[in-house]
Image (cartoon, rainbow, N blue to C red; front, side):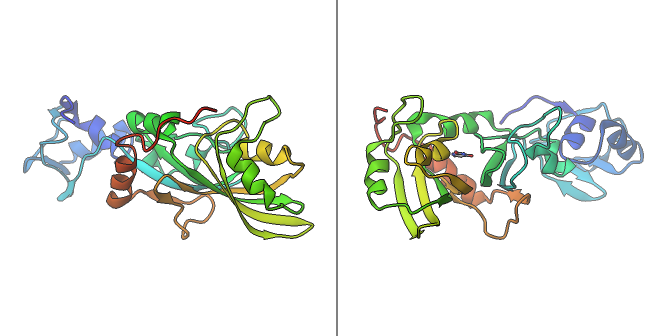
Length: 253
Ligand code: URA
């Protein structure tokens, strides 16, 4: 990472030890050590990667990036701020918000499920690039009986209301009866309201939509709507690996 030297109060505040003012007090109280020596000047510069930093005798690991998996609840906007409505970053603890993560891609306000948040712009960018074809899997409940011939239609491409024909998508019918059906849909692109519009093209209304997988990441079933956790090292490694190179050639839309 090789980041330049930074003020101690900035580093600690970024890591969730409080506001700049709170951190200054912490430093002044002699609770912070750098390379084993107490430092009382919060404006002192350190190399957050190489210098050994301790607060109250506990060593602090600096990291620049944060990667969160959230089970987005319905009723919350996929955004970092909004004048009137709650946004996903409102659900974060201050120690995570301090990293200023942003959502990778977008789920509709009424959609639930797997949402990644990070401040790693490069990784987020790659995850969203169409040429990487990151598959996103949705659990969907729709009105009416979903016929098996929709599986082929989704595979061929569905013409949406604006004339756009979707890239091949997989439809798996889990359960169908005349009132409602449950299906899983896998997309490798993310057009506006795509799942809803694909079903609307066949007269079905989406009643419930939840993203359950994104690339190699499964939504952790222990996460209740609104809960989140950091990605594990293994998950992050899988995610990076999946983006190492495009898995397929682009498919013409
Ligand atoms: N498709 C939709 O229609 N909505 C979403 O939130 C995601 C995919």
